[in-house]
Length: 171
Image (cartoon, one colour):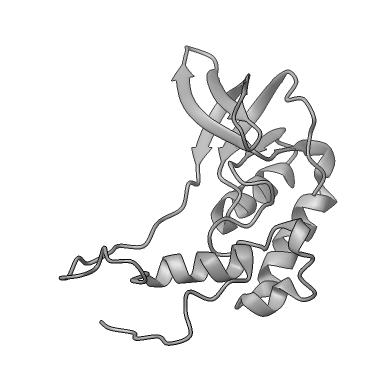
């Protein structure tokens, strides 16, 4: 997916979140001729489920870190097939969505350092912001070296780092 340098004009739909649900929603809408702004805080699509190592790590096989990589590739192919209808806006940290009678205003801070403010308008907004792991507290769960399954997965997928040499899985 090619990122859109400047979110211009008004869109029919703003999809906030480029994980599996956001990608599927953007693809389905764009396939029907809807002009979509697809925003995500990450630099690459995929969300937490299809999180990818940073480009600087030059991972030889990022697909090896994921189940159902082919489903992710199909979602990206659907978006690319209708890219004239989809403005991909990576590194957009949405902080406000306000509505008026005819359109919504989506405000975001852009880039990894979040220094530039941008806004766009859309007739409709779809929130596909995903989910997060539910931690069950137990004695010692905040000690150094104690990592939840989601944290361990994020370390591996983003940085190709294992949380330790020995692992205990509980629960």
